[in-house]
Picture: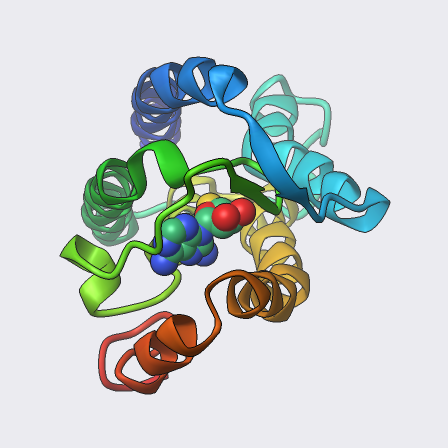
Length: 193
Ligand code: SAH
């Protein structure tokens, strides 16, 4: 069961990389108009990579030596697979809707357009919502309290810091248009918060 669980987690990671790679390549060609990158932001991105990718691999290699392991059951594997499918779907949708306006850090591109359609018509941070789902998927599929929860903790930290800074940057750039967009949308869960 542990092996199956880890393989499902690994397949999701590979699928995510295949989805992200073309966007990374395209983004390198886009010119930046406003750059709000900070050391804190970059450090949190590194923390997310460690939490979401490195920790489960380190655990699987046996480096934890059984520390904080928990039992794994079929119900958790099924739930983890379902949240993983939801994560990949939402990630793909938000990437497609954001298109050329996407960036890995806080930036406004030349010719940047405010996206308010697709999944962005319902929430302002669907891609961060997908990362939170990734963290939940990992917690369900990796049967170790430390390696399992590391991704979710890292993503929550990134989101906590990013959310207000990103919204301030978008407000500075798009003004009343962004205010109106905020007035009709929630951040992560449609109609709730
Ligand atoms: N917070 C969004 C986007 C994450 S990518 C989400 O979770 O889906 C981060 C970049 O997306 C930011 O640097 C910003 O330039 C851009 N961005 C965020 N919201 C946007 C929107 N509604 N329209 C266009 N660009 C947006």
